[in-house]
Length: 249
Image (tube, rainbow, N blue to C red; front, side, top):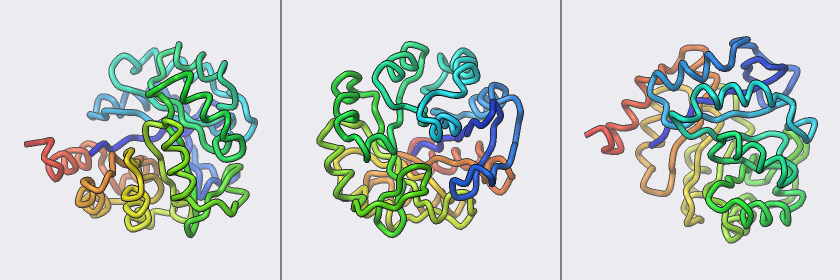
Protein backbone atom coordinates (compact mmCIF):
# COMPACT_ATOMS: atom_id res chain seq x y z
CA UNK A 1 0.00 0.00 0.00
CA UNK A 2 1.34 3.37 -1.03
CA UNK A 3 1.66 6.22 1.41
CA UNK A 4 1.86 9.37 -0.69
CA UNK A 5 3.26 12.56 0.86
CA UNK A 6 1.36 15.69 -0.15
CA UNK A 7 2.99 18.98 -1.05
CA UNK A 8 0.34 21.68 -1.27
CA UNK A 9 1.64 24.80 -3.00
CA UNK A 10 0.49 28.33 -2.21
CA UNK A 11 2.50 31.38 -3.27
CA UNK A 12 5.47 29.12 -3.95
CA UNK A 13 5.46 27.71 -0.42
CA UNK A 14 4.61 24.32 1.03
CA UNK A 15 1.45 24.71 3.10
CA UNK A 16 -1.44 22.73 4.54
CA UNK A 17 -5.01 23.93 4.66
CA UNK A 18 -7.69 23.11 7.19
CA UNK A 19 -10.80 21.77 5.42
CA UNK A 20 -9.74 23.47 2.18
CA UNK A 21 -9.93 27.05 3.48
CA UNK A 22 -7.20 29.16 1.87
CA UNK A 23 -7.21 31.57 4.78
CA UNK A 24 -6.46 28.64 7.11
CA UNK A 25 -3.07 27.90 5.56
CA UNK A 26 -0.13 26.84 7.69
CA UNK A 27 3.26 27.32 6.02
CA UNK A 28 5.61 24.38 6.60
CA UNK A 29 8.42 25.32 4.24
CA UNK A 30 9.41 28.01 1.79
CA UNK A 31 11.43 25.43 -0.18
CA UNK A 32 9.04 22.83 -1.66
CA UNK A 33 11.85 21.33 -3.76
CA UNK A 34 13.78 20.50 -0.61
CA UNK A 35 10.61 19.02 0.89
CA UNK A 36 10.10 16.83 -2.19
CA UNK A 37 13.66 15.54 -1.94
CA UNK A 38 13.16 14.87 1.78
CA UNK A 39 10.13 12.64 1.24
CA UNK A 40 11.84 10.90 -1.65
CA UNK A 41 14.90 10.17 0.49
CA UNK A 42 12.64 8.75 3.21
CA UNK A 43 11.30 6.15 0.80
CA UNK A 44 8.23 7.71 -0.78
CA UNK A 45 7.24 5.82 -3.92
CA UNK A 46 4.94 8.54 -5.25
CA UNK A 47 4.48 12.26 -4.59
CA UNK A 48 1.22 14.24 -4.54
CA UNK A 49 1.33 17.90 -5.57
CA UNK A 50 -1.52 20.39 -5.41
CA UNK A 51 -1.38 23.82 -6.98
CA UNK A 52 -3.78 25.49 -4.55
CA UNK A 53 -3.56 28.87 -6.25
CA UNK A 54 -4.18 27.16 -9.57
CA UNK A 55 -7.20 25.33 -8.21
CA UNK A 56 -8.85 28.59 -7.26
CA UNK A 57 -7.68 30.53 -10.33
CA UNK A 58 -8.49 27.77 -12.83
CA UNK A 59 -5.02 27.90 -14.39
CA UNK A 60 -1.45 27.05 -13.31
CA UNK A 61 -0.02 29.40 -10.72
CA UNK A 62 3.01 27.57 -9.29
CA UNK A 63 4.50 26.38 -12.56
CA UNK A 64 8.10 27.28 -11.75
CA UNK A 65 8.10 25.43 -8.43
CA UNK A 66 6.40 22.40 -9.96
CA UNK A 67 8.98 22.28 -12.76
CA UNK A 68 11.78 22.48 -10.19
CA UNK A 69 10.26 19.63 -8.15
CA UNK A 70 9.97 17.45 -11.25
CA UNK A 71 13.58 18.20 -12.17
CA UNK A 72 14.64 17.22 -8.66
CA UNK A 73 12.68 13.99 -8.10
CA UNK A 74 10.67 13.27 -11.25
CA UNK A 75 13.19 10.73 -12.51
CA UNK A 76 13.18 8.93 -9.14
CA UNK A 77 9.47 8.52 -8.36
CA UNK A 78 6.13 9.16 -10.09
CA UNK A 79 4.60 12.55 -9.34
CA UNK A 80 0.89 13.37 -9.56
CA UNK A 81 -0.60 16.86 -9.66
CA UNK A 82 -3.96 18.49 -9.21
CA UNK A 83 -5.10 22.10 -9.30
CA UNK A 84 -5.72 24.40 -12.25
CA UNK A 85 -6.08 21.67 -14.87
CA UNK A 86 -8.83 22.96 -17.13
CA UNK A 87 -7.64 22.22 -20.68
CA UNK A 88 -5.74 19.57 -22.63
CA UNK A 89 -2.86 21.91 -23.50
CA UNK A 90 -2.09 22.45 -19.81
CA UNK A 91 -2.19 18.71 -19.15
CA UNK A 92 0.10 18.00 -22.09
CA UNK A 93 2.57 20.65 -20.94
CA UNK A 94 2.77 19.11 -17.45
CA UNK A 95 3.16 15.57 -18.77
CA UNK A 96 5.90 16.73 -21.13
CA UNK A 97 7.58 18.26 -18.09
CA UNK A 98 7.81 14.83 -16.46
CA UNK A 99 4.57 14.54 -14.51
CA UNK A 100 3.27 10.96 -14.36
CA UNK A 101 -0.39 11.58 -13.47
CA UNK A 102 -2.78 14.51 -13.61
CA UNK A 103 -5.67 14.81 -11.18
CA UNK A 104 -8.89 16.36 -12.41
CA UNK A 105 -11.44 17.33 -9.78
CA UNK A 106 -13.92 20.19 -10.09
CA UNK A 107 -13.57 20.28 -13.88
CA UNK A 108 -14.54 16.60 -14.05
CA UNK A 109 -17.79 17.25 -12.23
CA UNK A 110 -18.67 20.47 -14.05
CA UNK A 111 -17.53 19.45 -17.54
CA UNK A 112 -17.39 15.65 -17.71
CA UNK A 113 -16.74 15.86 -21.45
CA UNK A 114 -13.36 17.41 -20.64
CA UNK A 115 -12.50 14.47 -18.40
CA UNK A 116 -13.49 12.02 -21.13
CA UNK A 117 -11.35 13.91 -23.66
CA UNK A 118 -8.39 13.90 -21.25
CA UNK A 119 -8.70 10.13 -20.71
CA UNK A 120 -8.80 9.60 -24.47
CA UNK A 121 -5.83 11.90 -25.11
CA UNK A 122 -3.66 10.70 -22.22
CA UNK A 123 -4.61 7.07 -21.45
CA UNK A 124 -3.30 5.70 -18.17
CA UNK A 125 -2.34 9.11 -16.82
CA UNK A 126 -5.61 10.65 -15.62
CA UNK A 127 -6.81 10.34 -12.03
CA UNK A 128 -10.11 11.81 -10.90
CA UNK A 129 -10.32 13.54 -7.54
CA UNK A 130 -13.67 13.33 -5.79
CA UNK A 131 -14.26 15.34 -2.64
CA UNK A 132 -17.38 14.45 -0.73
CA UNK A 133 -19.29 14.95 2.46
CA UNK A 134 -22.02 12.54 3.54
CA UNK A 135 -21.84 10.88 0.13
CA UNK A 136 -22.35 14.07 -1.88
CA UNK A 137 -19.67 15.49 -4.14
CA UNK A 138 -18.29 18.98 -3.47
CA UNK A 139 -16.68 21.32 -6.01
CA UNK A 140 -14.93 24.70 -6.17
CA UNK A 141 -12.51 24.15 -3.35
CA UNK A 142 -15.27 22.45 -1.36
CA UNK A 143 -17.33 25.63 -1.38
CA UNK A 144 -20.26 24.02 -3.22
CA UNK A 145 -21.97 20.78 -2.26
CA UNK A 146 -23.66 19.20 -5.28
CA UNK A 147 -26.45 16.65 -5.52
CA UNK A 148 -24.13 14.13 -7.20
CA UNK A 149 -23.75 10.83 -5.38
CA UNK A 150 -20.05 10.05 -5.13
CA UNK A 151 -20.40 6.35 -6.04
CA UNK A 152 -22.60 7.02 -9.06
CA UNK A 153 -20.21 9.68 -10.35
CA UNK A 154 -17.14 7.53 -9.75
CA UNK A 155 -18.68 4.67 -11.74
CA UNK A 156 -19.36 7.00 -14.65
CA UNK A 157 -15.80 8.32 -14.60
CA UNK A 158 -14.46 4.77 -14.36
CA UNK A 159 -16.15 4.09 -17.70
CA UNK A 160 -14.35 7.12 -19.15
CA UNK A 161 -10.99 5.48 -18.44
CA UNK A 162 -9.56 7.15 -15.32
CA UNK A 163 -6.86 5.00 -13.72
CA UNK A 164 -7.91 5.61 -10.12
CA UNK A 165 -10.00 7.77 -7.82
CA UNK A 166 -8.66 9.97 -5.04
CA UNK A 167 -11.43 10.12 -2.45
CA UNK A 168 -11.34 12.92 0.10
CA UNK A 169 -13.71 13.17 3.02
CA UNK A 170 -13.82 16.94 3.30
CA UNK A 171 -15.16 16.78 6.83
CA UNK A 172 -11.87 15.25 7.95
CA UNK A 173 -9.17 16.75 5.76
CA UNK A 174 -6.59 18.61 7.82
CA UNK A 175 -8.54 17.96 11.01
CA UNK A 176 -6.38 15.05 12.25
CA UNK A 177 -9.51 13.02 13.02
CA UNK A 178 -8.59 9.84 11.18
CA UNK A 179 -9.54 8.49 7.77
CA UNK A 180 -13.17 7.72 6.93
CA UNK A 181 -12.33 4.08 6.23
CA UNK A 182 -15.94 2.94 5.96
CA UNK A 183 -16.83 5.44 3.23
CA UNK A 184 -13.56 4.80 1.38
CA UNK A 185 -14.13 1.04 1.36
CA UNK A 186 -17.73 1.49 0.25
CA UNK A 187 -16.51 3.46 -2.77
CA UNK A 188 -13.70 1.03 -3.56
CA UNK A 189 -16.06 -1.95 -3.46
CA UNK A 190 -18.28 -0.27 -6.04
CA UNK A 191 -15.42 0.19 -8.54
CA UNK A 192 -13.01 -1.95 -10.52
CA UNK A 193 -10.27 0.71 -10.45
CA UNK A 194 -8.32 1.43 -7.25
CA UNK A 195 -9.14 4.15 -4.75
CA UNK A 196 -6.61 6.35 -2.97
CA UNK A 197 -7.75 7.60 0.43
CA UNK A 198 -7.23 11.24 1.32
CA UNK A 199 -8.12 13.38 4.30
CA UNK A 200 -7.52 12.72 7.98
CA UNK A 201 -4.62 10.23 8.01
CA UNK A 202 -3.17 10.91 11.45
CA UNK A 203 -1.29 8.00 13.02
CA UNK A 204 -0.20 4.39 12.69
CA UNK A 205 -3.63 3.13 13.69
CA UNK A 206 -5.02 4.77 10.53
CA UNK A 207 -2.33 3.01 8.50
CA UNK A 208 -3.30 -0.32 10.08
CA UNK A 209 -6.97 0.25 9.32
CA UNK A 210 -6.29 1.05 5.67
CA UNK A 211 -3.85 -1.83 5.24
CA UNK A 212 -6.50 -4.18 6.61
CA UNK A 213 -8.87 -3.23 3.79
CA UNK A 214 -6.28 -2.93 1.02
CA UNK A 215 -7.70 -6.03 -0.65
CA UNK A 216 -11.01 -4.19 -1.13
CA UNK A 217 -9.33 -1.96 -3.71
CA UNK A 218 -7.45 0.61 -1.63
CA UNK A 219 -4.25 1.48 -3.50
CA UNK A 220 -2.89 3.85 -0.92
CA UNK A 221 -3.38 7.01 1.08
CA UNK A 222 -2.28 10.61 0.79
CA UNK A 223 -0.83 12.07 3.95
CA UNK A 224 -0.14 15.71 4.68
CA UNK A 225 -0.53 17.52 7.96
CA UNK A 226 0.36 14.50 10.12
CA UNK A 227 3.81 14.02 8.58
CA UNK A 228 4.54 17.74 8.74
CA UNK A 229 3.45 18.19 12.35
CA UNK A 230 5.06 14.96 13.52
CA UNK A 231 2.14 12.81 14.67
CA UNK A 232 3.17 10.35 11.94
CA UNK A 233 6.71 9.49 10.87
CA UNK A 234 6.56 8.85 7.17
CA UNK A 235 9.30 6.21 6.95
CA UNK A 236 7.86 4.31 9.91
CA UNK A 237 4.35 4.47 8.47
CA UNK A 238 5.43 3.24 5.02
CA UNK A 239 7.39 0.38 6.56
CA UNK A 240 4.33 -0.64 8.56
CA UNK A 241 2.12 -0.47 5.49
CA UNK A 242 4.56 -2.66 3.56
CA UNK A 243 4.72 -5.21 6.34
CA UNK A 244 0.97 -5.42 6.72
CA UNK A 245 0.39 -5.72 2.98
CA UNK A 246 3.13 -8.29 2.60
CA UNK A 247 5.29 -6.08 0.37
CA UNK A 248 7.94 -5.84 3.03
CA UNK A 249 8.32 -9.60 3.46
